[in-house]
Image 1 (cartoon, rainbow, N blue to C red):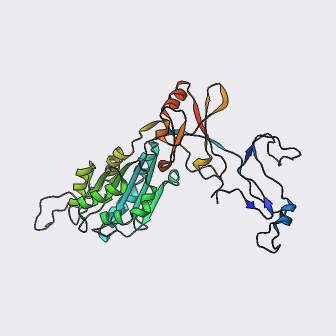
Image 2: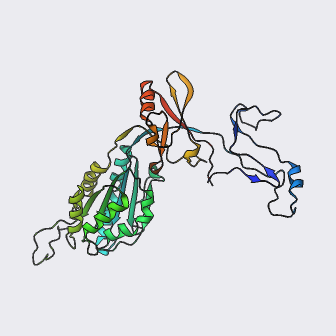
Image 3: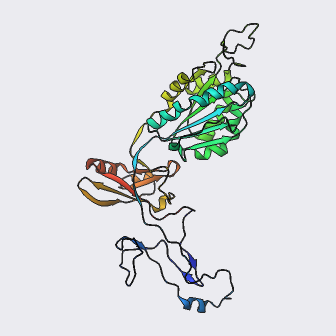
Amino acid sequence: MRWPCLFASLLLLAACGAKTDLTLPNRTPDPGRDAGVEMDASTEPDASVVEDAGTDASVDAFVPPDAFVPECPDRISVSAREASIPVDIIWVIDNSFSMVDEIELMRNNVNIFWDAIVDANVDSRVVFVTQDGSAPDAPIEFARRYFPVDYRVNSHDPLLALLANFDEYGRHLRPDAITHFVVVTDDDSLGLDWEDFHETMLDLLGHEYSFHSIASERVTPTRENPTGACFTDESSAYRPGREYYALSDETGGLKLSICNRDWTELFNLLTERVAIRIPIPCGYSLPLPPPPGIVYDDEDFTVQYTVPGDDTPQTIPRVADEAACTGSEGWWFFEGSDRINLCESTCDEVDAIDGRVTVDLGCAVEP
């Protein structure tokens, strides 16, 4: 939450957002604060305002003259890191009783997945749609990037569960992301076929996606195994995941066997597909999580660059959007992915002088 400029028009006027480079006379610097830093201007309470207002002095809006009035914090600059194409990964886990062993194997080996994404420095967000207790814990590096959805996923329901919960997890997905779905189940989708799911999900996302299946392949049916599900001496599935495998074929996803007890191999194969960092030229991501006491608000940003041997920051003007970059220099903000992008001409200039981009975060405080 940002501190708005406070208007107590009857009793107190205080300006939080107005900036000034003027020296404020007769002002004693706060202890420990550099008197030369840029400061927010504020006015002292004017008693005449109270008299002119003609209001009842008993109103609840009364603020004692010595009451604390919040001020904008000191401005903070952060180094923006080179951005990469976002990757959103949505898992859906079958919570039926027959999946107890598989869920334990998944949880015991999921660090392979986390480590691969962290090591590759992928701009990722991860969703797990499954009942609480089945979803794994995420490492600290995924603060504000991990979104578990507590939902009981029955044996036949993974595709239905993804659609039913889209409003909850969909708000965390990026419009320009490479999107991966991963299903883990020992059964098939009986309540929804893959074609209907695919058509609906394309409409919801607005772009293509890959669907990866950790389910059962089809084997030759026998009297002992009439459904033709996979089986080993240690595990077996309930039905072949025909709908999931068909969806993987349609979207170019992986088809991995739920009967494979070596989840190290499964996770390695999966992370080879999802833990891929594709840099964006002159795109910059802000640190996650934000610095203590700060919430990001792009309206407060000032984008600057410095060149080697000169620490004087040069301000880059802001343009409305990517289209406004045509024939213009500046930067624009990709709201859906929280990313700063330099216009092409500006990108070329900053790159030519080996410039270092920083962002002045402006005035914002946590609630």
